[in-house]
Image (cartoon, rainbow, N blue to C red):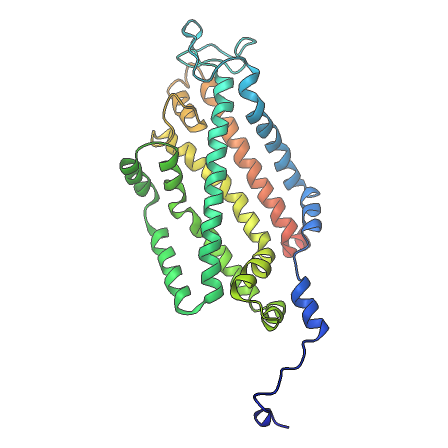
Length: 308
């Protein structure tokens, strides 16, 4: 019997067990991925570099016995010693305490900005890639327009309108920072939605929301995690750069950017004031980039073949 001769009102044939298995149990092998990550030298090196920073963020400010804003004018611009482990600044404030207090702000800004970028990027890229068509075209053109705006000019305008502070800094960093995540997510969704297991899930009656959250996002986790990991150091550097220019965190609060700005003016005579914040910024950015390389190896099959 030809296809056009078939009764349109006849019941559909029951789905095969293979189709049900394909749609129900297709999920990324995360256990082996994390195992591969930890056994990759770059990923392990990044984790080892980042671990002491995270530990000292928790306990560092309480180790020295000084407050981050306590003034010791009799001991201003002291070099590193047993009394002040990282030395003091021009107001006699303990740099060791301010470094780790500032680390809390810098790392928090980086993580919060990355999470905001993740949330907006998943929503924008997921909807755009899954629905497709004219909606996809409109959404991506909006993203392109935002991406073309001069970043520093937007930050300065936002700072003037909203004022200096943590909230305006986060808005400035994330205003266009989510676009890269959205493009990555959209590309993965466009690729994955053509897979057989998605067709099987549709045949089982999965709606758009279930497809997105239970089938597409989990299987795009590798590129999403890699992009998220690389977003964190970018946001940390953006915070440090803006604070260095005086557009971010303001005194008496401390961040690595403000401390680097204060230390630059004293570089010739008191180099330790710039050395320690610059070292921590560099170490943190390197650690996250190495972790990103480890995640890329763990989730990307082509990288694994090249490494072997």
